Length: 232
Ligand code: ADE
Image (cartoon, rainbow, N blue to C red):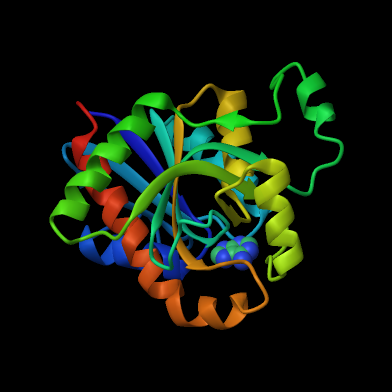
């Protein structure tokens, strides 16, 4: 039996997971939930928006539950030209887009890199799961890609073009890389799953308002099926 910690930035991203898997609060004071999936102990939590909130929650939950895996799940702005709204990105690496210069992270002896790689086995398993869900008509398209994370909602054609062209990012959000950094320092395998709510462009806000909940549900679909497949 593995212990899996699931982190979402917002209630709306975790809601479907809690409802589907009958997750219950570990106590009334905090948004930390417990359930079992596929024989695994699953702790899920709303970590809050942005790098600091997500890093704090990740470290707290690692200290408290000693997870075997950490999975960040939720929505993102799409950058890769092949993506449509509600498609899913299985993230293979995460990088900050607002940390300058990135070479400071490369010099940090706990990291030695500014590109935080997700666990290869979890990435492969998630891609298999996506293929199965897609065949069953439960998931749209999906790709493997890189996420760019930073402390701002990106809603500019120019910025999204820069993130795609300069960083090679497939999608953008506000927590993935900070959760990844904490996991890396703690030696815990992690994965990021993001479904697309908008294109981080000039119409991002309107698209986000329309698709955030449905995109959240898509990422939870992948998350649940993935945890069921993690070997015991
Ligand atoms: N999460 C979803 N869409 C986003 C965007 N455009 N920028 C940052 N985070 C997001």
